[in-house]
Length: 288
Image (cartoon, rainbow, N blue to C red):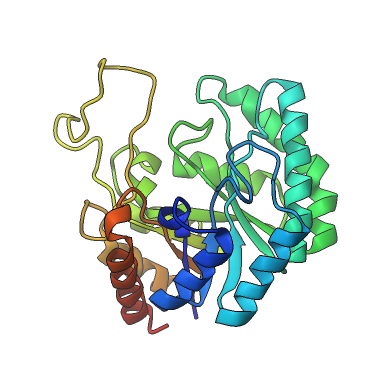
């Protein structure tokens, strides 16, 4: 049985984090995945949540029955600047304290490095993992890693190899559907990627995207041509080219029973309708 979670990203601008749990309940979700927001944990910043924040979030969870299933922080723990890396490890330690207080036992994150210094960033990421291993193990919190556009590891095979290289059973893998074409450099061979990571696959991010490599590569037009950047989308299913029929069939084939996180971004004016449709589709597909 899968757990379907809402990433409430599109609501952070208009309501508190506690109220996003109430919004999730209104939409019919039982779980949320809390991605970066300024009230809790923001990109590469020290978490701002305090005891009152934790109490408010726990109260909202008790009132609604919506559980904080996962956190999705982004900390620059692969930085080649050792002072920065050390500061980001400190950020992680504080987040783990907060996760424990909220009874969150699973966190999904990014490698957060620079594609122009992949070897150095990989070394720094492993160093951070070594330093944080006692903390993760003390709290009994699992970690799931995802490759991300413009990270030091962007391709599925490379990312899964880095995860396996830790040789730690509490570190798993997250497959991101809206990154499918970046993960495969345009191939979109979702069946192979899912099967190859099935042993450690614990979460799937669900949103759609167009293939930036399709045809002559002009699905997206970036100026100036060749600029050092990546463009991707998190659209509603059907507004893109991710082959969800093949994604879902393969997840069932490998017996996936982790988290499906609905993570559509950038469509705030239609957020409620989009998230309701996404939830209905996933429940129908997985009989959740």
